[in-house]
Length: 392
Ligand code: NAD
Ligand code: MG
Image: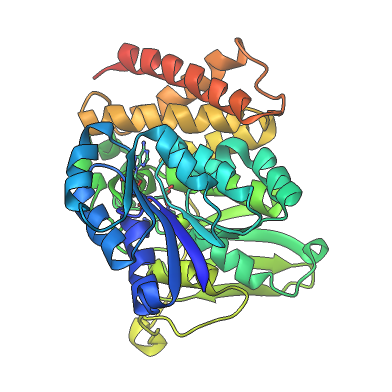
């Protein structure tokens, strides 16, 4: 019986993962080691009971009594706090889903790698902030990282049996998010509710807003660079409003392999769960005749400064990805709180990158996770200062 753990079980990716595990036989088919969540301990407790998890961990220490109460008499161990989440990752499991949102997913992902199993990586921030370290650690521990981001899963699948030498380019598709058809002048006044109205994908709130600002695509460009070890100038982004082609790989003979499917994260999660096999998955089948047409357009870098900043980060590499991500997280917090405008998020990230360039060696590679966390910490302080100056 395979053992599994899910970090961020109560989120959007976590729920989809839980759904697949339950459909697949739940506790009859999997030994569930650890499930972690945040504030929704009632849901975490339900999931832990359904999968008969060994331990359930909430990130929020204040909610430990509620979690204990919900799981009283079940024999499921309860814990709380960031350290407890990291400790849960020390428990060996054959397959681990990393689906905490943000830089908080970094440490558990790294610790889970040490068992040398499979790490299904939804938390793109891990690759953006610590890509080189992560890939080196995976190689050292003989662990396999399976991408869960739909674009990266698509690229991974298009590359099966191929030689990286023959890859000429990777074309990442982007829906363009909720505001893709807005005139540029109006974007500055976009509200959170408007940014949350994603046309195709149902996801957590933070990634949905990042889709509208294209910070999500910016993170994914960097993620592509780190995961596939491909030069930045070979990575292209194209707006594809229907979200049917999840990404493409272009080869030196001119062929382009595209991965198509319904926009449902249970596909890439299920692919990672069953890799290297393919199993039947409960996702809608494409009806191409009903779709009629797939459309594409080039992204406008004036609307999406995040894409330009991603190019700068790839040129700098080193610690710049950690700074970029941390500044973006702070800017997003301010946008959600209503204290920054939509287009000011990119300004905060840009200011933070240029300020940190004068304070730390941005281009030097991190040799430990602490280097990454240190850059992340400093970037958060500078980004908060930048946000305070810009405050709308
Ligand atoms: P979400 O907000 O729906 O869920 C996040 C999960 O992490 C929840 O379980 C939450 O309780 C937990 N969490 C939040 N803050 C935490 C903290 N500080 N410490 C510990 N746990 C914490 O997010 P999501 O949309 O499921 O995204 C999860 C990750 O997957 C993100 O990195 C996102 O970029 C990536 N991703 C998501 C999708 C998607 O369709 N949702 C697609 C591709 C990649
Ligand atoms: Mg994606």
